[in-house]
Length: 187
Length: 91
Image (cartoon, rainbow over all chains, first blue to last red; front, side, top):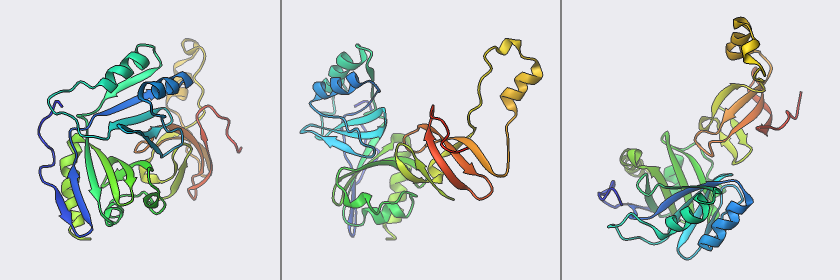
């Protein structure tokens, strides 16, 4: 981790809603279009990238989120050591994807902040500031969407029922978390 | 406000998108042979009609992909949405 300080200092809890930052978690964006790219990633990580829009796939160690037809985010399921910014997964993908000109790998560990939300009021909170229709989304485990929350770009991953991962750009995270606390206090 | 069916992500609200102007404008094959007026016509002049218009849109707060849309500008009715490179499904 390049940035050792937590953006969000305290976990917050409200009736039916708990919010906390999870760090350090490795996050990579990978991009590619070719069929060989998909199979090379699959072989390297032992994880099939989701082809279907707005879905995710998961292995023991990694989760892959569909972001666009040629773009995925991969993040580690477990918390990693904070004293190191080198990841074996990134090195492996650099070797098998970048050096073979199949696609691109970008480390976005420090660019995105991961906020985990738990509770049955998560989508009540989102509905106060997002134009996305969460009605079908909230009942299906593994769905992913990129949308806006209080005019800030976010990635929402429905990890489990009443357990959601939210990715937001670091520079917006403090303001977003403050807004979420304000909104949650009024639910 | 209206809903747009992104060809990649599905139905989303208009505020997630950005309009990218008129679609299907072909770049001249020999720009150096054009007069200034013809070049300005290609570069700047756009239709702004009341009725059915072919437009480019970008799902800027979603998948960030460009696509085309046929929209009736008089009532915002979306007639069709199709990917870049595809032929317009309606005329």
